[in-house]
Length: 336
Image (cartoon, rainbow, N blue to C red; front, side, top):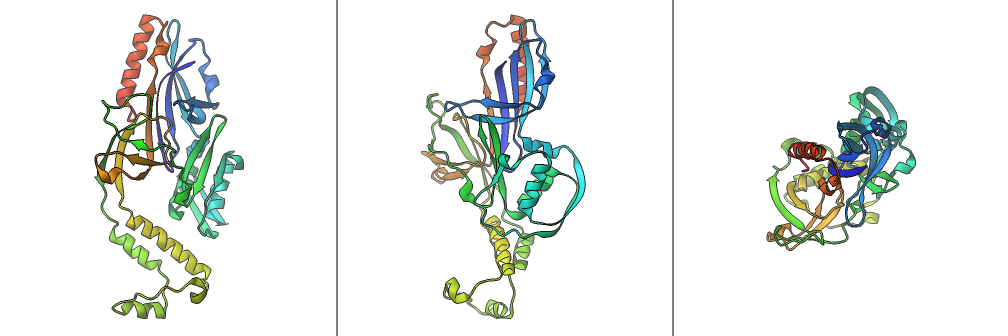
């Protein structure tokens, strides 16, 4: 079988999906492809995406070749199959995340926690009410300030969880902006990048919630009422060790502050460099807008590729039908 076209969406904290169109033997048993592992290779460095085939169908039956459609997703996608009602007691969020994965056959060799710096005490109660295991996992990650991404290799893929931005890998080569008419095909470049949306600042409700997470005491209350409550820094050994409750309160406060202080700018662009993945940090250079020449975290990557030369040798009628189908798919795909 030969890949003729593909599109894909890879977003941080979500299960990726790649739609792949292939041509092959008209007598192929398409059902035999279901639930098999596959690696979609693209890019000069032989990078690609590994996953499981969760959908396989014959789109067109031709004389010499037929057109097939496959959907490639991670094993994490199995967690979205059913909605459940369950209660979990006395378990820490990271342990519950691991438990959810292992229930669906995702073993310890298929995921890892790295750069985990937060405190995660056991919660007395977790309630899952009419939500899938995937939604529960995503909700736990959002509540605790944990993100996840995927690491791919030809033999498999692995989930990577972390609560530290230091875990985001950086692209080794910076992206140099070039206008489309100036860029060649030999090296990957950034062809377009622009700020498309500026979101408003955090709501007052978030500010109120943040204030409620601050530890209160009579001493803090008196200092807060003074005109200037700026005190000289005291090292930890002078202030004394903080207890676990105060450490958890500070952790929640710091994560709320990270959300409040974030500019929350949404920037989009496109490039001819293959192999980009969500959760990577890229360095942009030579952009005419100086503010965009910075490091950026990729939160969503839309992929698209095609190689029409694989139709050589096919019957003219089959080639025409296949090209029409691909044109329709391109118009309906956001990644095209």
